[in-house]
Image 1 (cartoon, helix red, strand yellow):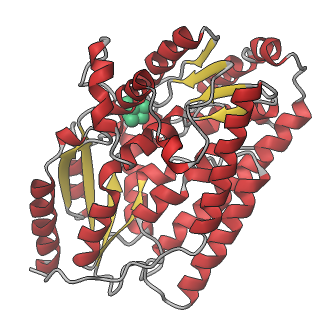
Image 2 (cartoon, helix red, strand yellow; image 1 turned 180 degrees about the horizontal axis):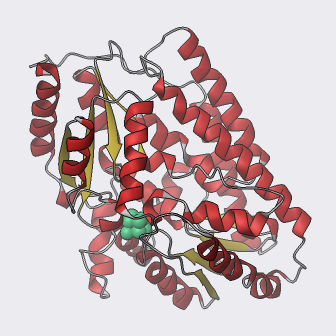
Image 3 (cartoon, rainbow, N blue to C red; image 1 turned 90 degrees about the vertical axis):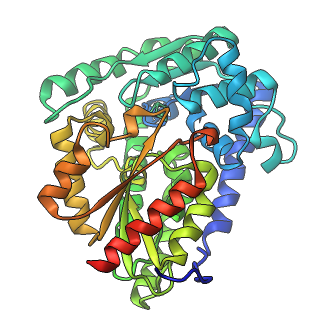
Length: 414
Ligand code: SF4
């Protein structure tokens, strides 16, 4: 067994700049919430953010807030509050921790940003069921609470090839949102503004992809854990010049590491692909655990989910419809398996870890034989760990550590 010694994990210098732009983002929302000077839309993480931004809304993402609740390990305490009003402990722990925190009047934003006391109040809530049905119920609860309109896109699930009829139906639903959104903002929709925002979103997405792709270098300059932190602007600020500028900065730093053969995890021996949700409350623990084994978890389906290569500013509605339907989570198992196979070879992966997140079946792809099928086809071994994204009662740190160590030992033997 590899001995556990302190292995150096390189710190990303651009983190300071990212923290600054994320702070600006939350302070702007807080100001708008207090003064009412700008309208605020709440949007699901892979919802039509470009349309909302182009119509003048500031866009807030409850999933980002829920991930903060997880990362700060506040989430587990709030889940029972949502359970008490009828939301099962078995459903999405983003939903239950976020609603629970609201019911308790708590937010990690207050800890991170002095002067922010609460999440920004929405003028409208907009969901897309491309990821799951939970987001619809989550947003419906807040729509009722704040007495504001709820708009939604209902996406096909289990899609094989994304065809013209899929794209048309989603594009139509997006276009149908324009009139009710105009009513809320009191402004006319401008197609040119949407094109401008989609162009910026595409640039952000291309840069984010380039950032993640640097991990294909041996040794990798990046870890999955870096990715979960630095994806912030791609989630909440896509469609802005700020996000584009940030990823140029981050990419330059990572390219320099590649040029100098600088490893994110010193003496990288094994390269792992992470399939499923992060365990937000254990990012640092997991990062240290893998580093101590000179193993880099360097790529993931999760961080790749904010790559929208189909965005085309010349055809904004259809291309948004395609991009938001081509996502991994929307697709049938065959398409998902092909995708993972491509990732394994592109990132030169030695093994896959599937996270079976108890409260997110939508992002747990290990329940219907996929690990076994992929291992048979590719020869790349896998490990499934049981846990959860936000409910820390659903994981065993000891069990995870034992299983990961045994898995790395198996990789050594190969
Ligand atoms: S995809 Fe999973 S984690 Fe995300 S909102 Fe849906 S159930 Fe929750």
